[in-house]
Length: 409
Image (cartoon, rainbow, N blue to C red; front, side):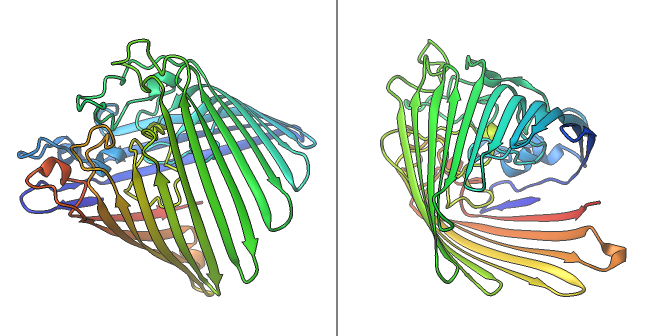
């Protein structure tokens, strides 16, 4: 991975080797056990710990692969999954450490997967209705490889500033003992589906996620999304200067996606809007954000008054010798000025973000399981920031490249 910043600002790079082994053992047809161990090796952290002389800023994306605040030496290991699973007809109960996918809490694997510890219940009443319930006591954020309490996982990275422009005081000070997750997915017909999630974070927040979807003729589909969030209890701490959410906190995001499939291609038009009601706070330690306009290496969580538009094209090819996937997207994120601490938590300027990825998988027996992917990205500054280079470095006017070589067996 490499990020090349503009002008005299520092460039950053990182090289890691990553792997995991997962094993599942079925004792009975109703009882199985599973586990997973992950390992990560770093080629050297000199480029990760260095700071740009002008701004004092370090890397963002490269540090996400190996965060020197939490990882030591050159190798780290984690045990993200160790669980028992009980299955009774349409009921499934998972106990222990596990990975689950949901819009806001998801496994996002680098450098380690976001894992949960607790209990998860999954019920499929029929092909039209699915219900999920989770009681989570501990989380293993992807940056630490360790299981900690819910409050301890919030604020490990990208804490930004409070609404007065001072460094946020909540890291290490959020008091929360559990996370409750609920989901209901119902299909009214083959073309109409509604997905509802609720995330209750003890003493911090309640976040509601609603997504209706509609499938039309000729492989055309439309999805809409609404996220509403409000404060619960103390918002994380009785001291307002140390709380994650302020008194009266409310935030809302809505968006839509129009998708058209044609032959081997997929075309998307995506829109997202975070209103000026309040900052949309979705802990980055718990997974990638769910907005339709999400692109790799971009996030607008923590902001308010954001308007985003993104178009994307993806094409797949396959023959007897190889599989290939190409996608490219262009997104526009219109944000408040970087010096507007009330609405811009992370001093991110308005920008245009372009990316393109090509993934190649040979199908010959001697290369079965291998793949290679290259991601290219460039972010164009889309507003005047004067001489504030802190709002530029790793945030705009940079080129980024990822090269991923993988083997799966």
